[in-house]
Image (cartoon, rainbow, N blue to C red; front, top):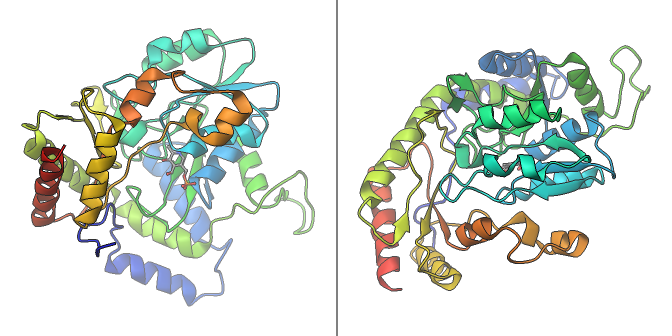
Length: 375
Ligand SMILES: Cc1ncc(COP(=O)(O)O)c(C=O)c1O
């Protein structure tokens, strides 16, 4: 492989972040110290929610919520087939069945108008995903969820900082989850967060992330089955200092996205992300797709050419229902969710991060145009 000239993503770590992490290393409190509640409180305050529970990944956050809500083998969870696999896996962790709703071809979020018909007497949870940082139409989802008395948990792992109708994403359901892997809007290295206004749910998640310990009992008293999903104080310190810069990060990403949109507007072979009018996006990745007349082979040729030229790229996402173990376990097959499959076969994620220089961005655009010209 040639050396990568422009990576797909890159975290934005500044001197304050480094200082914050080093300061923790000089204390004896590397885990379960003061940075944990400090990060949780700052995060809850940012969203205007009562409780935030920090964990070691977005996947852990999803698992804890699904378990705390008591999903089990008889239950169904409705979500999108066009998402990162962990969204749906959290149902499988507890033996529940994922039920997918095909996506809207424009927004790439699941089509809220098809939600109602996916609900059965077994539906125990609806999990909207704000894909790539574009908020779902929460009014429509909550209307159906309330009418059918099914709780909503937002998978907001890709959308920290986005708003829908003036309200922050992650504040609509009974709980929501966030993730802080280094490609996210802000990072803790690895990490995640459960956010909720429900005290009982928050307490259960706190206990289960720490081996099922009961805060009132001793270190070796385990009230329930738990896990080690703790987030260290080193990560929490990084999270605190990154959170302070989140509004700046969101604005920088918006600018990079707008510049891509302007530079690619005249490329007729591409379908670009449409404008968002019901609030503000928080761009996670910048994904375009080839028009329908092109094939998956064409798309793969573009990805290969970009990589040969040292441009980081990927095919966000591969449909969840077509992953082998989903096919084997649930019998999903090609054709089950045609819009998802049509979109997923043609996506191209371009290098996208806060400090992508104009020069590098121009190189990406020129290389992408050259790749398309070769089709
Ligand atoms: C939509 C979505 N859900 C869940 C996750 C899981 O987060 P993590 O990788 O921190 O476990 C991610 C992370 O990429 C994601 O994009």
